[in-house]
Amino acid sequence: MNPARLAIRLSVLPILLSVLALVVSPAYSQEMTLEYLGRLNFRSGYPDHMMDARAVDDSLAIVASNLGLALVNVHSLPVDGTEDAIFRLPDLNTRDLRIKDGRYVYVILARTHSPGGPGLAVVEIVGSTLVLRNIATEPTVIFEKLDLVGDRLYLTTHSYGLRIYDLSDPLAPSLVGSLSDGLVDATGIHVVGDTAYVADGAGGLKIVDISDEVNPFVAAGEDLSTATGTAHDVTVRNGHVYVALGGEGVAFYENGQLGSRVVYDAGTNAKDLSWMGDHLAVAETDGIRVFAVEADGSLSLAVRELVTRRGTNGSHLRIASALESMNGDLLLCADWAATDLYRLAPTSGGTQADITPSLIRIRFAPGGGTADVTLWNTGAATLDITSVVPSVPSFTVSYAGGSIAPGDSVAFTISYDGTPSQGKGVVLFYSNDPDENPLPIQVFGNTEYLDPGEPSVDFTLPSIRRDPDTGDYIEEPFTLSDHLGKIVWFQVYGTW
Image 1 (tube, rainbow, N blue to C red):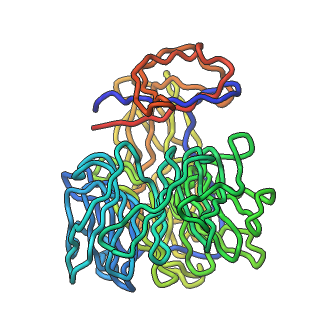
Image 2: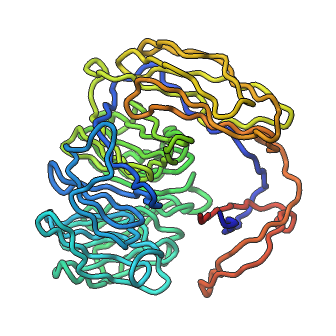
């Protein structure tokens, strides 16, 4: 793996740096369940990260990955997963997509694996094939997410703001308007009538008047001092606005009023939103969280499903990137290593066990130690854990397996004996959970890290920053003490 490079942004508040164990919020009982139905797998031998999935009709869906598009019949996806698709359109690094009239696909292209670099691809569905028809690009502009309303396509482009395309000729989008003034880091967008609601990164929620699409403008919104979290996605229902705020959770703005913001916990990192009838589904990096929407628009948690997977037995990292509802009760989740299909149903009608750990990654200090872990069964059937297998002998588990009734849990410990040469591994929990078997808990021994609130020692790192005036990337060393009194945001990009 090549050395990761750090992109750094600066603001103004004190610094505290720490490394945390990733904690999964427990759920003892749930009013709904997500029944796992099938999976499109990561292709063996390919860095095939699945980034989005969209429904074409009641059966067909298109899955976007960094190696192209796949056309699949979701009802034929087997429980044990498949790498097969009806058709694959390769050599495109694809991200967010929308489908017009069940025929035309508009898909964001990232930097690599795509002809011409980043941009917007136009793909036509022709029978059971996908045909690349056109690519629209803007030099240096990175498109992120899009929304489709009639013959208009709306795209967010980070610091470059908002783009509006005319689709009168569906195969040749033409740029009709743009906006960068007043936007910080435009990421997600949802358009209702003459208003575009924009998830503006650290700038929060922005409300953009697009009645004159040639000259749109920010009519209202939060800013760097009033926003909370990092706004990644936005959706609107019955006049209420909901924003995915990364690590902060999901914000609810009653009747779209900025001053009414209420934030709900959404696990690790809320990234994407999708409606399932009267429920709001959230991709939260390490899982799916589905909220019931009350009559006043407020939210209450209905169900949570873990998707994160790391292991040594051929499994891959799974990060919930995007969600798409089908037929009201079906949910597609693109999560890097797979695209999973679930059905939302009342718990009383469920048939599956569901394993949920209190920790999915544990770090131990040099010399060894012990961590307390709890496993819950948040499903509707008895969870049978048949074996518990540490990958290296320096880690031991005080629990050998057994049965856990729905809603019950078991507590135990994982210990590290301090052997430096075996300072990392994974503990695999084999069970009858259909989509998390085995469940891995990563363990890291012999590590130095900071507890929350503990000051960091000074350090210097190689880094890349972007010049705000020219847009050029500049390589220069970063020394922590040079930025005393400021917030430092590290964004790490790795290649392998």
